[in-house]
Image 1: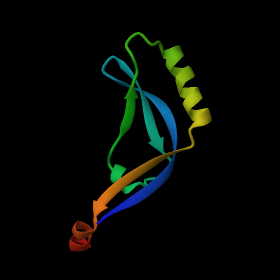
Image 2: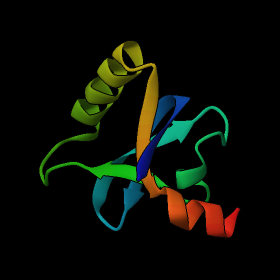
Image 3: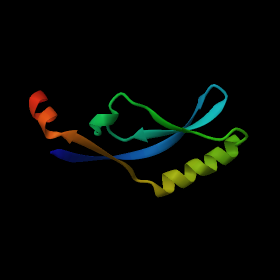
Length: 83
C-alpha cells in the first residue's frame, strides 16, 4: 500500500547567476521539507531577459507565492523495513 506525505514550507525568492544565465532561486524560510534537505531549487530564465525584467518577475513571485508544497509517495513495506 502506498502512503502520501505532504510537507510545506514558507519560501521567498532571490536572484542568482549560474554562468551567464539569470536564475530565480527558491529560498525556504526553514529547512522543514525533508525531501529538499541539501537541495537548491532555481528557475533559469530565458536568454535575453534583462536584470530589470528578472527583478520584476522576482517581485511578482515574492508578492504572490507564500510557500512550497512537496508531496512524496512511499511504499508502506519499504517504510516499515527502514523505520
